[in-house]
Length: 83
Image 1 (cartoon, rainbow, N blue to C red):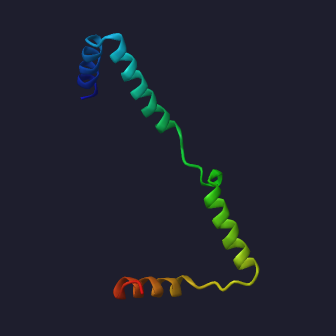
Image 2 (image 1 turned 90 degrees about the vertical axis):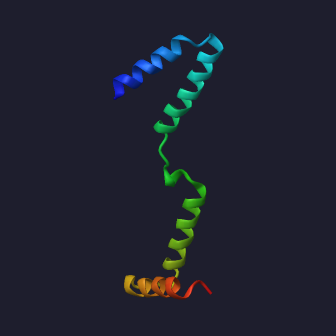
């Protein structure tokens, strides 16, 4: 299947003028760049701020709940809707 697609792409590219070829290169370059970039949550200022806030809350005596209690709360929200 890939060979068929490759042949069709090469055939189509051969028919393009220079301006169209540049547009294709820009498009393909964008796709390749998107694939290269991975989201690093630790470079996201909002994420880091939220994690620091949560850490400080618990460090300063904030109440934690068990996984069981969290599951009960989630189940209750799903059954009764958010109030």
